[in-house]
Length: 376
Ligand code: SF4
Ligand code: SF4
Image 1 (cartoon, rainbow, N blue to C red):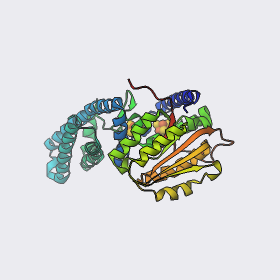
Image 2 (cartoon, helix red, strand yellow):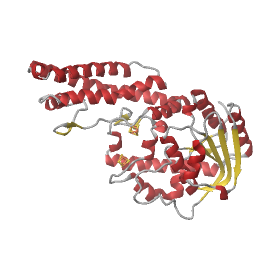
Image 3 (cartoon, rainbow, N blue to C red):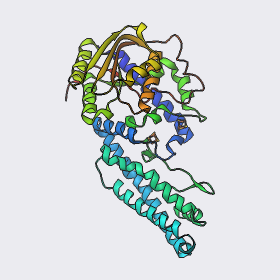
């Protein structure tokens, strides 16, 4: 049974967390998003799935890529002008191989730009092509670096809208991630890569340090729950199975009643594999290592549902550590943990300390159930 006061608290805590991130990452200059793109093929699955569940997110990603293409075009012009100037200065004679690589890079850059601007379908196969960009950029800039007059010429032509800046005399600074806009930040929203959502913050100011101070452990855990209703949860589970076993993600669901749990059991049961349902008491809670080894043998179409009356944030944190390792191995267990309640912890998880650089909750599917909204 949905608990409206819990749902409202989760919404407030999510806003509070977003506010801290906005302030701290904003004053750090969003450094994490200036390391080229963090998006890998596994991350792309998460983004594509989120876009299928949220049409506004798809529009946001499309608009973001269009906006980024203006910078890619300015970069292309700077590269073309650089190649023309170097050729006129005789670089072809002494550095024929580097000039040939530069021309190939420019051609690939042009094709990539045309592709980004082509309104290509934002599905997994088509979006994979975006991941080639780091190789195109790196090969092209390596050719520029191999030409003695290359770096200063490119930086001169880049003045204005283009992205090329030297980090040192022989190294270009990485550009912003393809999904980053200076005006709105990350356009991937809830579909951002787990590694971005988990942070890896060694900076000062430090986002995890500030979140510790502002939220405390229990509120931090709650702030990672997403509010949905039973229909939304079922739609998500069905979509993952339709997309393929590599799209299935573990889920932790807070606040479901018996009827709602039974509906999820039926949905997973219909997927055709063996489904185990275990009712557990709190004493049965396991370490991250135990969870990891149990889930390692759980392959689609088989699934596991565990039902607890209550857990605390430490249990979820420990579970999240295990599920983070499972995610890193690109495994996709069909695992759903239901808990009716979440208690306060007597003491925060030992890894929630002041030297923490990353945390495992951002990449995890944590859901709190709200009252189902009638269909419009
Ligand atoms: S997570 Fe840390 S390093 Fe990254 S943008 Fe935020 S404050 Fe900066
Ligand atoms: S995916 Fe989003 S959060 Fe991650 S680096 Fe790119 S813009 Fe930043």
